[in-house]
Amino acid sequence: MVVMWATNGTCSIHVEFGTAPWNLEESATGASATFTEHNTQGLQSLHRVKLKQSLTDVLFTGDLSLHSELISIVQKKVLSGQFSVVLSAGTFASDMSAANGVAGDDYMAALQPAAALIPYLTAPGENDVEGGQYSHYRHRFAMPGAPWPMDANNLWYSFHLGPVHFVSYSTEVFLESGDSRAKTQKDWLTNDLTQANKERDKRPWIVAFGYRPMYCTSPEHHECATNSSRVRAGLEDLFYYYGVDIVLQFHEDNYERLLPTLRGVVLATNYTNPRAPTQIVYSSSGSKEAIVEPSANSTTTPPWSALRITNGTQPAYGQLRIINASHAHWEFRSGTDDSLLDSLWIVQENHGKFQLEDLPSDLGKAIDHTLEASGGKPGHLNVRDPEKEHEASESFAQTDQTRRLIIGASFGGFVLFLLIIVLVVKLRKRTRRVTRRWDSVDFKYGKTKLYAPANDDLDDDKEEDNDFEADIPDGTLQTAKLINGK
Image (cartoon, rainbow, N blue to C red):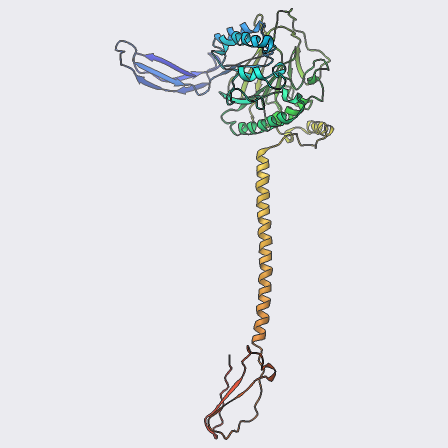
């Protein structure tokens, strides 16, 4: 956010701001400029301050049908200037392909007053599938970082808004006959969340939103009400491991807020430094049908359900306000009279990956039990970590290189040892000498050189030259000079 003002002269360019007039905890300093061109009679000292951190207000909707009362409410909220972005999860217009596409045209025309002012970002729902082609969804919506028309095999994306990393994902891939799209999305989520965790100093909050919930207390024929939920199996471990702070989900006809939970085990009873993502489930559809008043939380609901409101077709919307790096505020409001239905503060001072080893022993054992029951290993979630894989690969490469060096050095040492043995044998052979003793020398010849082999057995050994040479100058001088041939 940028704040500007003009004065007659110089002034302080320091701004203090906060969540309320009595709570001005933040401050920022800017710059001034003198403006005189065609402004001789106007205020000439202009001042500008860019706030270091501004509030992020997000409006959440889902299951927004063509005739929903909430469409006009969304328009009014956006026109008020209160919100930065609208996030909406299918199903759009109930079915945009109805009446050969006319329903889609009417729906987009109804959204235009709001979508023309602030970003309107989406996630696909069950009626957007269209036989796996997602034709209307891919062509009528263009999302950040994605090609247009969007690829049916890549309907997930992420974006940054203030201190938040938002992730839009598809739950419909888990209900398809094949698992190729589910695997592609999981690989993408793994890489995206890995990068998001590297940048948590810039964007500490991670918020994910999609259509079908992982948990719900709806009738048992709803997949989210079963332990065999494919959506839960595909996303829960991943969102926990990579420290997703808030997960917003739609589709059900009731509002539900979960306690921080992993694999059905409640890890905390409040939202101050929670040990798992905070999950919200609701449907904001609304229709021309009768409104069902909110009901109190039932005593038969599971322990992970902190609050359940059966709002049926009552139009409602969610509002998430990111106050700062550690505080976020959630509100669930009636679309009829804007009354507050639920609210909570989420305080997270330790953003980052959630760790099983940080849990108390009793909770850790409970999680291990669920892991074993699903065929897994205790202490091992169904996730992959590219960073650890890279570290393991580097460690293996270093170990392998060390092993190769050791083997090479050992082999080289063995070869050198053999060479030394061969050289020693040859040297000993070459230095072996055999002498013949002459007891007397009494020659009457003239000066003559006499040769006698040192060893008659070595006559044929050309490498041996151990002959004696006797040089006798005369017959009376008995001197001899023995010279080794080598």
